Picture 1 (cartoon, rainbow, N blue to C red):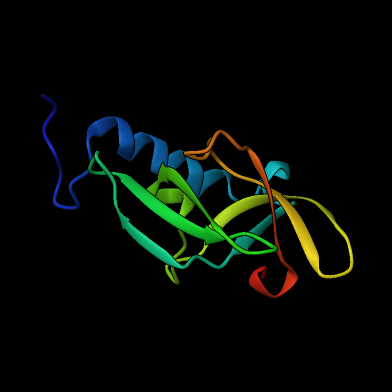
Picture 2 (cartoon, helix red, strand yellow):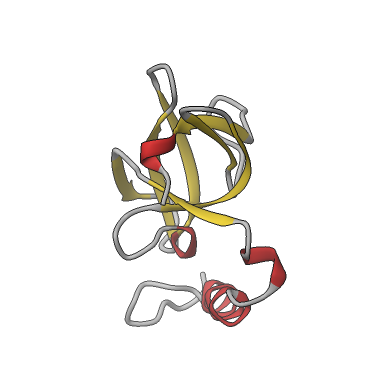
Length: 111
């Protein structure tokens, strides 16, 4: 079992986090939005989080992500895909528990 640092991260998760931090200015992050979450809890692995997101029309979507995908204010970083009047279509960083990659959220939940 790999050793964990003071933050509970494995060497592999440190490399991943540092790469994400370094690359946040790259082209792939220009279409990123922050989606409000109802709840963020610890995941099964040290560098993993589970986020509950309210979807447009009601209901919750659960997605397990790297802690690098959760901002300091507990919002989920997701890719902006499209928008209609009151909803925004986002692509999640990982497949949700129900098998969805893309979800509609209320526009008010997106920053």
